[in-house]
Image 1: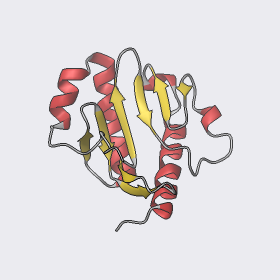
Image 2: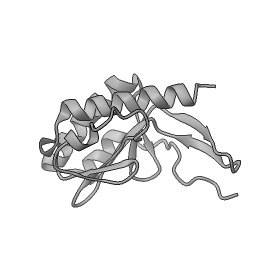
Image 3: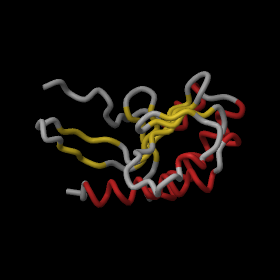
Image 4: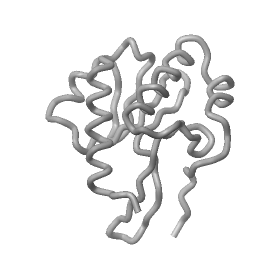
Length: 139
């Protein structure tokens, strides 16, 4: 079975953000660091070369594949930032209230935080963390 490529690293989050994010994206990244740290109670860590993650959980699929992933995360990319917020535990219809963004299963793509409702993002992130912690208790 292939090994997961996205793992925690020793790279400094602050140094990564200085190199990869500028202007509004840097300010948004710093705001996300505070919000996601407050929600998870965990400091930011680099996961792989480009994801700022908070906390972690260990998953095991029915197939036997297992690994670790951050509870919440984000990556400042061009032209959009990617927010990693699992859809589990979403209160019905809440994602639709987020604002101007694109979404896939666990990714939310935004140009800037001002395009979305921060209170809705916070509620989504809190619900995701609560659900992940219930499904994947710490070992």
